[in-house]
Image 1 (cartoon, one colour):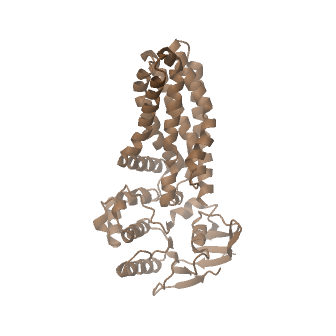
Image 2: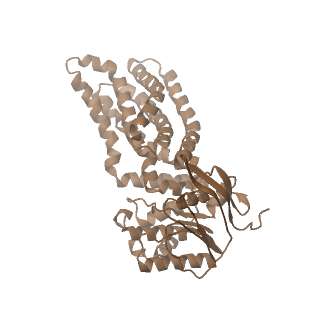
Image 3: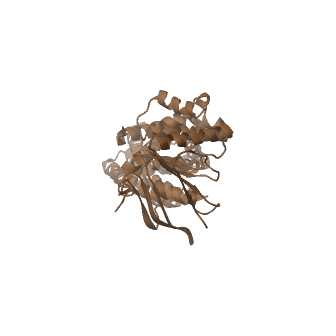
Length: 226
Length: 209
């Protein structure tokens, strides 16, 4: 009796979640990084706090991107190191299903967690509460898109010893549109302007990456497995 | 042209690793109810051959077919019938032995916890079922990975050094498992440095540098 793709997807998500919660320190690292980086900014600008309000969306977004990048390099690497990636690749399930499941699970434990703590950071940076809805939505779309982009980079850099630096070099340039539209959405929400345009762009990027990245990442994995 | 549509055919495989010509036209046939023992000095491409046969590695030339059909074009069918145990036991240290089995066997076929515990019992590690794999010894991990091969209920076994890290009883266990598998009509490709001491259809494939 073979196992369907949907069932396999849930099984892998379940496995990834269980693995993450067995290592809570890895789960907390990006969050703590996010909190620390964003609190460093107000400290550095102590004499000109009015400036903080203007740069808050940018600070929030850069910190969120870097924080979720931090955990991306372990997306496939630990599985590749202990041989479980080979078992996954030979499981009879397509590599695309495996990539989708692993990326979604990764987003749930890092991206979504960053989104959930962002109101704390937003408050600390003086972002008004009316802008929180836009901030949360844009961050959710942005981190998910970054996870898809990161899956490609992580797939390509598995075999390298210092792959995480290369991973950042591959992913960050691709993530610039996210930063531009994400920060713009938050900024416009703060000033009360229409945010629809920026959010549409983020949503479009998210759909674009989640339809194409699984295939690209699966192809990258197939190459690195050889 | 294929005379044995029920088995595995390795046809003139050539593999280059960088500028090293690792496998030079290796051919083999494994029929159902037969075991091929791959041996040879270190660095002659035994593991590479196993990876090619598993489909993980694409050969530069030649092809592997299963039941007369290429394993590349019929990947899903082939993988459903395949159990591959690499040299590393491929266990997640943070998951228990049973969870490890559940998540990897579960992608291939539906299996109950009782069934998986049964497989662990057959390889003599039922006491470790609920321990995280990281606390197990190398021999115990090997036994868990063998339990995974059993639980997959596959007809093609590809085993890379299944005897590594095992004590005398463990080695006997591997031989008994192989014997049982082959007698039940399965086929196996086994990389091992030692003599297998089996009383079933064993053919030898020796690789040279």
